Image (cartoon, rainbow, N blue to C red):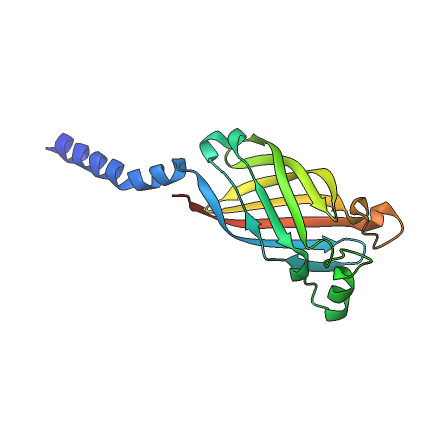
Length: 177
């Protein structure tokens, strides 16, 4: 009788876990994003929104992943209206002439839980190769990268090292259909 009860318990456990296992193996898409940045030398934090993406993520085959997305420069916010207006202006991001910041991956390596994405970031029609390190935490992906705004002709300070920006990306994931 004990063997039969154990067998049924095991069967119900397997049946109960099947949706979780199936979900884990299905490709996922980014359903929402929060992108924040910090200008290190100025101690200024901000965010940028109006994110759109075209992604293909399968954590069982992360090397096949593809990430492509953009954000609207007009959505840049630092908590200071005058600074935001200035950053969106011609001297810095020039939102009127360059309304989008885009990224397109060129390679992905690592595991499904921690991986590195290399790709091209384009700001003001200037494309530079960057690397983003991601960690998967439940149904959330958190990525970080460091770049220099001066590499994109956005000179906040004269010295390159004073133009260091840390970018954090937090993506909420959901199973794709």
